[in-house]
Length: 119
Image (cartoon, rainbow, N blue to C red; front, side, top):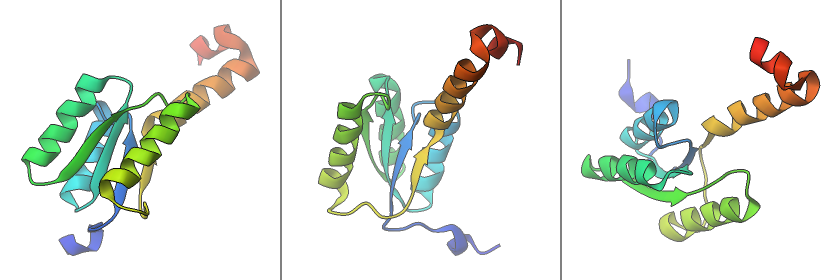
């Protein structure tokens, strides 16, 4: 398979939940494919570790502490990405953690917390 098929050189990827698990894996994979990565999560030490590992391996990354449920944090995240990597973010935005949280809230509202635990 042609490895150039999945290159994202020049794109900026904002990855929430980037401090561990799937988000960490996505952040590192996108960096290895050429993206500049903005690692976002609530735990600063985790995203700083991931961003440092990306940079140590020749990639470009920054860490921005973000709670995606807080409008000010999300605005800071976008501003930091633009300020650090350029005037326009084009490309990939990965909201790993947000999808899970959204589904959780929907289930809680529709079925109540007790029902959610049974699913």
